[in-house]
Length: 415
Image 1: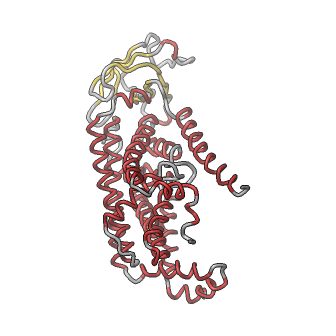
Image 2: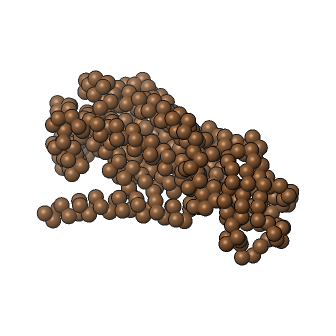
Image 3: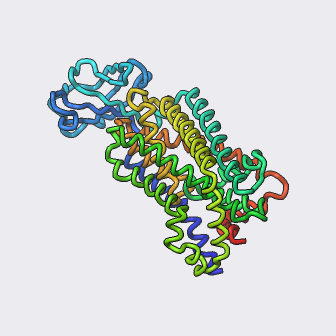
């Protein structure tokens, strides 16, 4: 009875923590009213010039070549800048193909459009959402194929459709379990149950599959961060993570290092040493098949490129021009944001992902409302895909197992 209380408390605290983070992002970072940010004209760098934010309402298509902005009388700055007309109540805006905006009658003044969150969602382009869903679904096939090959390499002979079913069930449980990878716990449980004679191998296949995906994410982000100047401040963080992951894998699988550390004898001293030995042997299976690991890495890169393409389609649908954020920028933004979203603090990574996308898009000058909108759009697409996985729970005999997976996922690997 007493052991159930911490488990129940944790189940409630994690969603509440995610809601708290999301609420903080929406309250402090996201504008709910339309605004334009005007930068004082001058020769010096933009960051050294004064700026003022005017709140109001856009008229017409704010994403188009021309639009109008009505300044709200009740939201005029307390200290009106001298470089703006005192009677300014309306801005006639024009935007070029590169996404640069200007205001009629304000020569030299730089203009940044910051639509409020309601307008961003009202003006979304449906075709962009369709392209995003197609990209995400295709990316999922790459990920499923990667895990299916790792399963078979470990001796768990399962059809591709079985891997497809287990992966979709994992996606469904991502909706209620913390982090973007919470459903992997359920997938591991199901894989172990369906391969009772190869339990360590089935469990390790899920772990290796996830680590391969995370390493590919870190690798992709690191390459872009090292060459793209807007993301220079991430260089002390992301590339070292990628190097540590690669170095850790090499050290763990190195025969010389294992012999020097007398790794097998260390395992003998651990409690439940036989189980740890079984898991260790399952990991070492992959060391002997470097080509298969390379193929898994290639499938991971295909999965991530398609996911980035889908997020870029969302960005364009919400109004982020390719001149402001190009594909190379997305190659840094999406992997880093998804890595942060995978931290198991909230179901589906809600809250953490919105803060990450808002911050990362801000590095290339994208309004906070647009960054958060892309993140929310991405999660809604993932939720739709995950709900499709719930259809497998409608099969006869699955209801009891589903409840057990929610209550006691950590007990299955040891069974």
